[in-house]
Image (tube, rainbow, N blue to C red; front, side, top):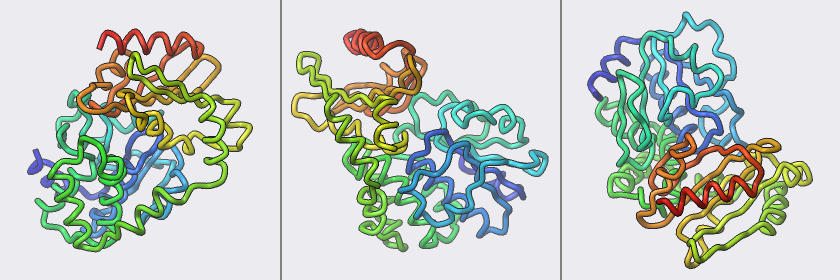
Amino acid sequence: MIEKIIETINKGRNFLITSHIRLDGDALGSELALYLMLTNLGKKAWIYNQDNTPAHYRFLPAASEIVHDMGDMEQYDTAFVLDCSELERVGEQAEKIGKIKNLINVDHHISNNGFCEIRLIDAQASSTGELLVRLMKEMKVTLTEDICTNLYTAILTDTGGFRYSNTRHSALWAAGELVEKGADPQWISENVYENDPPEKLKLLARVLDTLAIDLKNKMGSLTVTQEALLATGASMDHTDGFVDIPRAVRGVEIAVLYTQLGKNHFKLSLRSKDKVNVERVAKKFGGGGHINAAACRIEGNIESVKLKLLEAIKEL
């Protein structure tokens, strides 16, 4: 399928690049790297995202080029949908994007059912960034320092700093290639992991009071309420990484971050250790992801949401 993608790139002139709502490092790093590659090839390209770029990813090369208005849809002959297991994940403009003549999906989620005819999907890959390294190597394009910085960020963040089970040989090989060609691991890590605003730490201080450990069911959780967000002046972006705190507790195999989106509406971020498959749990509620990292949304008050999740985990 890589050959078909390369053929479509060679024939295309105007490209739209997009990814999912609630942007993360893999989505942004992949989008920006692909944008730089296409423009270096003399193509016209635009990156459209529904959501704003989180502050700790604004250091990425070409991040200022991202737009939030697609303009005239007739101008695009090809669209890349990156890091999405389904088209709806791009947000409110999914239907319009789906009508673009050539649609290419590059993704590594196990829940992807192949919504594009032209696609590069590999659930064994650590990240969409790793798949783009594979594509660019096949195309024999020049991996510039800026492209490498973006792709290294994609791999780094989706492997949890090379700590998760998806840190396989291929991920480390790709990261090594990117470092060799100009990516600076220390500088990138400092920008991603050591660049938090005071609001995030104030929010974390409040959220730690909600820490719940259930060693009988090998679970740990934190809860972020709308009240806590308002009181600290923090945003949803500032919850990034919180789910890893209960995951680090000895005896906990499944960690959950409950984030309140509305009065009776919660987003659940799930993480697990070893071979515990939280993607199967998320799928029960219309979500998805990976074996050790998944997400879903559940309606109800926090008590009922926790009960529904516990029942699903017990079934697992």
